[in-house]
Image 1 (cartoon, helix red, strand yellow):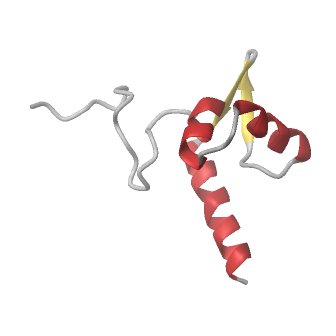
Image 2 (cartoon, one colour):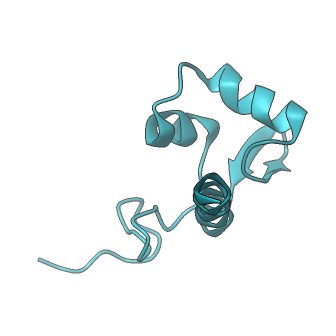
Length: 78
């Protein structure tokens, strides 16, 4: 079996996140959110992981999502 290439959507980073930009649907799945609207509400309220637009599509850098999760867990532990 050949190892996955970096363009393979199944390739993962050390933190277990995909080695590609994440979609709002990915965040819904990762965090068991009720709907994609929750992701858009977080964005409007500036409380979720930072995202960016590619044309009309919203995307998230997996490294930024990991940093946001780490920040949330650190904040909750304090």
